[in-house]
Structures are given as C-alpha cells and as structure tokens.
Length: 359
Ligand SMILES: Cc1cc2nc3c(=O)[nH]c(=O)nc-3n(C[C@H](O)[C@H](O)[C@H](O)COP(=O)(O)OP(=O)(O)OC[C@H]3O[C@@H](n4cnc5c(N)ncnc54)[C@H](O)[C@@H]3O)c2cc1C
Image (tube, rainbow, N blue to C red):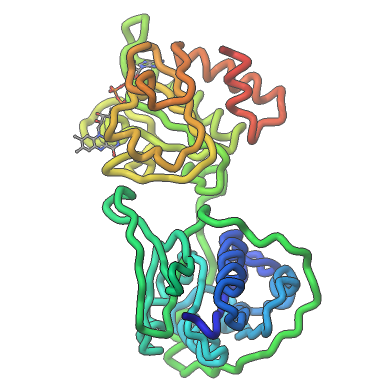
C-alpha cells in the first residue's frame, strides 16, 4: 500500500497550464489518497510552473515541488529524466502517477530504472482491491483486461487519457518548493531549436474530439452513375472534419487502397485505421459512412458509446446490432446536407442531432 503518492506532471506547451490528461491523473491520485490515507505531493516540471501550479493548488495536496528553469522548458530526455528523478526522490514517493503524454512516455521507464523501481504504461485505472493496489490495462488489442499488482517500489504508473474524471476544483495560490537540479554538460547536448508540426486543422486524428467520423471503402467505389467520385468524397469528408472538429477513422479496405494503386483519399493513412488490426479510439460518439461494419472493423469501436452509420445497404453489418442507428441512405447526399446544416448551426458537439434532422 502507498505511503507517499507523487502526482508528476509537466506544464503544457503554452506554459500556463498542465496538459488536459493531467487533471484526470490528479483525480485518480486524489481518489487513491482517500482510499489509502497516503500523503500526496504534486511534482511539476517546466520553465516556469507557477501558473500551472495554481490550477491544481486547491486540490489539498500536502506539498508542491517543482523543478524549473529554461533547461526544463521543452521535452528532452536528459533534463526530463533528471527532473523527474529529483522530484521522486524529494517526495520519497513509493507510488508515482503521471499522465501518458509523449514527453513522459519516453522518459519515465528510464527514471524507474534509476530509482530501482518499476513502471507500468497504458494503465487505464488504479484502485485498492482487498487492501492491495491494482492497476488495470488492456492487452491483445483491447480484448483482454489485465490487473497488475506489484511488490517493487517505487512504482511509476502512466495513466491513459479519457479513462477517468478530471479534477475540476478552483484555482488557488500555490506555495512551491523548488528542487534544485544541476544538469551535467552532456545533459545540454540536445537543444530544441523549435517545433515543426502540421496546422492543428490539418491533423485528422484528434483524440479529444467528441465525434469519431469513419470513412469506409464505399467512398471510392462506383456510385449510382457507374463512376467513382473520389474528388467529391475528399471534399465532403474534409469539409465535415473542418466544420465538426471530428476525428477521422478509416476502414482497413480504404486505408489499404493506396498500396493497391487504386483511387485513394489522400489524407487517409494506416494511422487512421480503426479495428482489430488498427486502433481502438475513445470518443463519446461515432458516425460511420460507406463502411460495411464487419466484425474486424467494429471491434475497434468498443469504446465508442453512441454509434450511428450511413450505408446504402439495409443489410450491412451495422444493421445487425452494431449501431444504435443505421441511416439507409447515400452518404454523398447525407454529408453534403450535413455540411450545409453545420455551417448554419453551431457545429461541434451536435453532429448526431444534425444527422437526425436529415433522417
Ligand atoms: C485478420 C483481419 C483483420 C482485419 N482488421 C481490420 C481492421 O482493423 N479494420 C477494418 O476496418 N477492417 C479490418 N479487416 C477487414 C474487414 O473484415 C473488412 O473487410 C473491412 O472493414 C471492409 O471495409 P469497408 O466496410 O470500408 O469496405 P466494403 O466492405 O467494401 O464496404 C463498403 C460499404 O460502402 C457502402 N457504400 C458504397 N457507396 C455508398 C454510398 N454512396 N453511401 C453509403 N454507403 C455506401 C456499401 O454498401 C458497403 O457496405 C480485417 C480482416 C481480417 C481478416
């Protein structure tokens, strides 16, 4: 059982807050503190953590520790590992909870090794069961849920996003204890000179989106006039992503087409593939279009709470209990009308209601 829990986080790129997932991890840390009676320390890393610390200072943790300074502004293995190690030691933590951000995923296994402890990644929940701390995570493409107990301490646990209730208390003044970390010269060898990333609206995979929009191979097949309309499909789908803010998924048949020299949607890659051999994204709602809804695809929808599909075929897989609502309709027509309605309305969270208007 834990005596000292450390909630470990780094500031967001904007610098004034923590990455969204951190607030879920803090919610989990507070729940565990209540269950175990352990002390809770907050440990923060960043160039300047004051503003971010204030967003969580009201949670009632015993201490707030920080490693700060220009050396800790951006993601870099040497400085992040040194900072995380120093915070874990200063808090005398036996359980360390951290968000599974890319910045932490690359560094915390090494920190666990330096502390002679252990680490678990992709954890979805942490609970006390029969007096023992248990972490859960999924294996084998989200089909088997494993429960992990560890004797080794300290135990670093990286929690996945979208699995817990975020802490949402009010901001408060933060009293921060600075933990000094002196980097060796070799720790400064890597210098981040800037970040090159696609525009956020060019990024089609959006884990925080309220809606998953799935395109299937039907978008590239011959339509009623005997011809494919791939250009039109591209425009309709990109317009929808723009107005709705949805995340884009694809069926295997569609994403495989580029390798088969067939007509393709240019923005669709294997990263978009949802299903048994693809991803299992988490979104409150999903809308499938021109996709048959076969089992190997739909198995990737297990964390989509409300499912709707548009298909010409009333006998498609979605009709067999896999979707809450199946619209038997031409997706080209539906999406054109949907986009027009979106432009008139407030967009965002209302895509299912907007589809309903068309039904
Ligand atoms: C081991 C294994 C692993 C697999 N893993 C995955 C996986 O991870 N993900 C995955 O997706 N698949 C996977 N598959 C493949 C899967 O079984 C299906 O073959 C695939 O999902 C079919 O893709 P689709 O529905 O887009 O294409 P199709 O089966 O070709 O269906 C196209 C659909 O579009 C509809 N349509 C056409 N035009 C229109 C229109 N104008 N309006 C509305 N509807 C229209 C048609 O009615 C049809 O239902 C796997 C298969 C195997 C064997």
